Amino acid sequence: MPRPGLLIVVLAAAIAGGGCAREESAGEGPATPAVLTPQRETFENLGFPAFATKNTTRVASADATRAAAAVARAVFPEGGTGPRAVTLVDTSDWRVAIAAAALMGPPIDAPVLFGDGDGLPAASRRALDELDPQGSKAAGDGQVIRVGDVAKPQGRKTTDLTGATALALTRSIARLTLSARSRSAPAVIVTSAEDASIAAPAAGYAAKTGTPVLFVNKTEIPPETRAALAALALPRIYVLGPSKAISPQVTRQLRRLGRVERFGGQDAVTNAIGVARYTNGTFGWGIEQPGHGLVFARADRPLDAVAAAPLSAAGKYGPLLLLDDADQVPRTIQSYLLDIQPGFRTDPVRGVYNHGWIIGDRKAISTATQARLDTLLEIVPERTPDAPPDKPQP
Image (cartoon, rainbow, N blue to C red; front, top):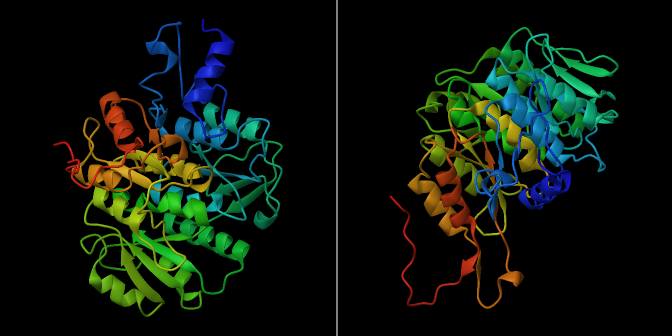
């Protein structure tokens, strides 16, 4: 049994800058820490390096439901200012979940928790009780925004979003986010309804800004998405994903509904980097310099992107980067992190810092990969003009 004081110290160190210095119990059954789980007073079980390093913090959950609960409680720690509302969405459709991430954005302020059919998992239930939302005026004073046919928590005022299909639900989400923001010609992200790994980076940016996310197929615009766009006054449509996921035929059709710009990359990894780098006026992360938070998740676990989205919307405000292998950091990510790696000339105390959130257990992202990411995020002495540049590891 760990000493309580020791656990608090570890958590404070592990989530420095994240506003959470307590045990994150977000599992099923008995309280199970989702961030750190020390069992004995040994070096390894204090949480280093598998759960936290100098420049990374891991939300070590094998499933998105626990991860979402842990992230929400880290972003809104007990004793601080809680969220106005909580979004409850089912895990059965990643498109609805990614769209629901926009409800975390201003002014609704509702992080996502996951339901399971008509039930409420224990992790989500405990997180909801601890977050204790008091109601979001922008969401009809609802304490819980129910997206689709999910559980209705007892004793909570709900705002219910309905739709006969998954894409009809994404349209309902967009309608609420736009009405809350009172924007007649907003920016809208349109991304793939068929490739979750391409769509996943939209979740973090939507959570930060409240930008609606809608979906298209490779060769056609579904009627629900067409209707949602037609209801707007020629919005700025940012198409997320390559032409092999969203064809030029579709972008031509979208130009009849608004002003279209495409961004992203050719595969899941480069697409996420493209999102992190992209900027067009006030739209986009535009991260080309050091001094940022970053979120790392697996490309084949899109619900983890949704669970992590509040980390992009608060604290260090960082985009999502995707890994396609548990045991390797892709060369393209290594190159990007070297581009934005912090440096100092004389005193690192006066420098800026990067920090990474790792989403998933060690089967999703290994400890060795976390250690490599830690090195790439580290502040380092600036190179002299004659020093050769670092090269990404194979």
